[in-house]
Amino acid sequence: MATTYLTPGVYVEEMPPGSRPIEGVGTSVAAFIGFAEMGPRNKPTLITNWSQFVDKFGGFHEGYYLAYAVYGYFQNGGGTCYVVNIAPSLAPQTVVPPAADGNARPALEIYAVRQGLDTPGLTVEISYAESTPALPPGAPAPTGGDEGKGGGSTEKPRPPAASSRAGDGGKTPDWAMPFRIEVKRGKDVLETFDGATMDRESPRYVETLVNGNSQYIWLSPPSGKAAILPAPRAGSFALQKPASTALQIGTSDFLGSARDRAGIEGLESVDEITIVCAPDLMSAYKRGLINEDALIGLQKSMIAHCERMQDRVAIIDPPPGLDPQEMLEWRNKSMIDSSYAALYYPWIKVLDPLDPTGKRLLSIPPSGHMAGIWARTDSERGVHKAPANEVVRGAVNVTQDVTDGEQGLLNPKGVNCIRAFGTRGIRVWGARTLSSDSAWKYISVRRFFNWVEESIKQGTQWAVFEPNDFSLWQRLKRDITSFLMRPYREGALFGAVPEQAFYVKCDAETNPPDVIDAGMVVIEVGICPVKPAEFVVFRITQLPTGGTAS
Image (cartoon, rainbow, N blue to C red; front, side, top):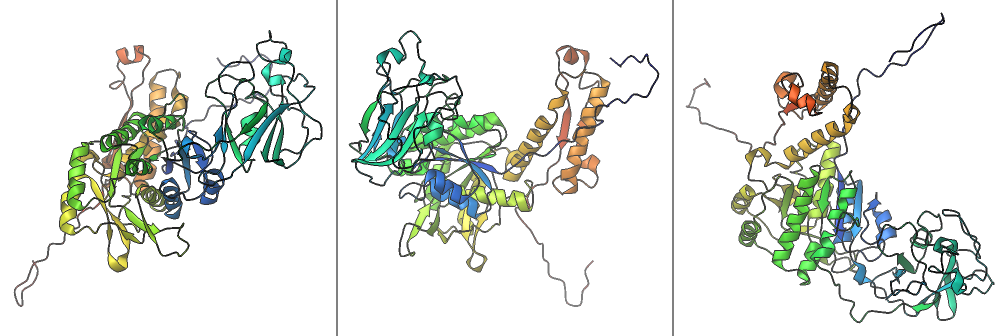
């Protein structure tokens, strides 16, 4: 209600803004799911450049494609991405200290940082100070030395008495028992981390304290939502090399779950993602860890995730080594029909960075490079521009030359070909989704609608719980109309005048009494997107001698 004025004077009131401009959301944030040689496990991790990826996940790893895909993404214009590493069993050395409360449950998973590198003789020693002060949750613990450095305190730590352990009636909770972690090789202390705690709220939470700071180990506390986890048992734990260093992975590792923020489903927790790639589906397939049916099933799961989220598109890779006829047969066998997916063929060849001679070529799936091209096109032209007729940076060749006749069979099936055009370079020569619906057959149309829908969704949150009356309808109509004028001026909408390009309807017709009584306001938006000139046709005729054009 308006302020009641009783005393004469001058009063100033702040009025609510007349309009709330709708901001366009980002369109080119990719997510990559695969196998890295180090770093966080099953956690979407933000990466903004190649050096950052190397620091967190290591470099190229022979036989696995995640690093190559991310490198190709940045090389072709990508700027931001999320990486999900699902390769827990690549580590050559692991150890699992049990909880200190006497239960058999594990307290920590400890493994060597660099997978594929043999670092023999690593031992992790967990110890407790003789006197452990009781600290409130979230308080920093005292340190006994320089964490992350060799050596440490000269005080000889020992496990606390049994009465101070969890399960003793709550005398000393686990968060009040800071412990020391020492990484040793033989008798040499390589690193020391003091004052570690299992309290997730503490700045010295063991995962925060060690991960990313240690050059030798990475810690994974057990999954769960408990704020305070059980403390590990004191003792010396040697990292053991597993009987087999072969990657053990299955469909469930790729699928993951939204609850655990793992795998494909775990990407639900990141709203910014607009492109989804899983290049290491191909390495798992090549190694026989998943068969062809499982491969197709996981690709369909990626697409189902994108359809459910309605703001992202999956880029899927074909199996390696297919000729055009085999590619056509595989496309028919896959039975994928979705506008939220795009398929590129064939694989591309790049210089192998692991070859010291710099001469060996390596065949890799194209999804990472294609995601980079999508990002580059969005930045240079806009999301409404088809990401095609673009040079594939970093590609030296393709694994299979495709002729015009062969592409004439693949293109109608939604297979976007990557072709070598001599001096014009290696280019993306297709811009279709895997949808049989002609209205959604172009990637640019699907992604433009995703952008419009998500931008309007986020830009009109203010309207929730506002009085549902004519004033609200007019404000929504005005804001959405102003927003759509921008892509219209940029050439993303087709029409000589705005009225031909889009319309916004929000009135008594879209909001009859029964809709209002249901607590709803309905806004109808129609847009006419531009579509790519996929076929440029010149009609040339011969004029008679001395004749003139009519």
